[in-house]
Image (spheres, helix red, strand yellow):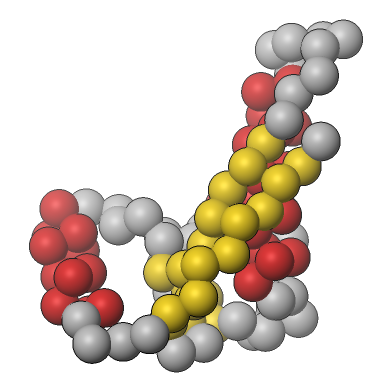
Length: 88
């Protein structure tokens, strides 16, 4: 799960690691919450994240400007599913 949470800059297919969209979004949210909670001992930290599923492929933040410029062309005309995750 941590590998998926840390490496979404590359393309990951839904179900590829035995996880669905919600499980991946929750894993990302949990990773964020855990990272920040280390600097805030004793405090309640909430994490949240989202994933976009287009044709069973998760689309994440682009790793560079070239990929960011190409993303709208990739998404054009496709229907996707946006899933939000959370971690207490």
